Length: 102
Image: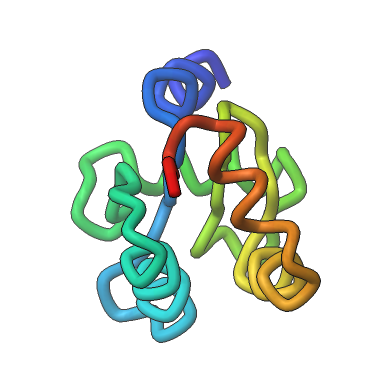
């Protein structure tokens, strides 16, 4: 768990993703459209990817991809991010985390 905590605390936005996951692609595109440059870890390309997936699962992220952290806090997967976006609360979160300045 310490490894994941370190990874997510170093950058304002961290996304654990998989290269072939359509929902991961959608969430990454949403952040890019906002002008945010998230740190992305592609679990299927990492040597510790399976271990990190297990840790994400223990955090309550199911499925484990995408898993979005904002300001070091686990926010959720695609459903949670899209709900925040539709409720217009995602952008203020990104601003508070220092990932969005406009």
